[in-house]
Image 1 (cartoon, rainbow, N blue to C red):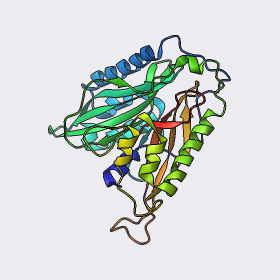
Image 2 (cartoon, rainbow, N blue to C red; image 1 turned 180 degrees about the horizontal axis):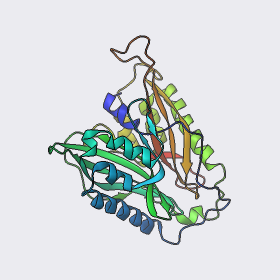
Image 3 (tube, rainbow, N blue to C red; image 1 turned 135 degrees about the vertical axis):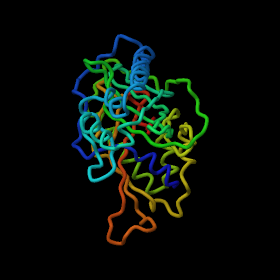
Length: 308
């Protein structure tokens, strides 16, 4: 597996108990169509980006986050558990504290009830000395009393290269299929799908497992300038393993899910199974946090990852 791709799929998670959106025996479908709800989310993302151009990076990112948002971090505390922690962490980095950022979404999806959704796009961070650092981001959002706010956020560097600027929806739900659906147990089934995904990778290899468990519209941060799109292309980005099950293993630690039961996120850690060159013999094998956005097309459909 490419080290860059490994880092990209392992971008954000935290060790917390399993939790979900407030349980509802019956999902209440939003009055707006999925397309209209997603348009609102995308416009909110764009509005935060526009306002953020005039703010330091910590404040620009902080403005879009929910109070209990999750973001990965380097150092002794790898998982930040609130907006305040995230802003303080970014502000403590002199380069980030004085940087400016601009971003725009190019892909996104929405839950059938219109209450949760995700965006994925490109970000450019400009340091005070003018140095530019291109990157990618994925945010998972919830509709709150204050408007759309991100519950989970991650970004990763990307190489220079041309990327598209237009937006396209992926995995739009069929609202009629989700009317009057009981979402009880949906989060447990989502996390079970993540575990089955990891278990399959130990048998057939990481690439083939990504091909099997990916949605047709799935996107991955990948190692190139643009997002990798489609389960087959994502799978092809992994280096062949000499023997399946030798490179990595992973599992979910907690998750959250839309009340309609068709969109959610699993959070966990990817564990390396081979000792990297130069790592001291007594040092533990590295583990990287991740979050994966999952979608299912209908109540009878299996969970498939759609963005990571």
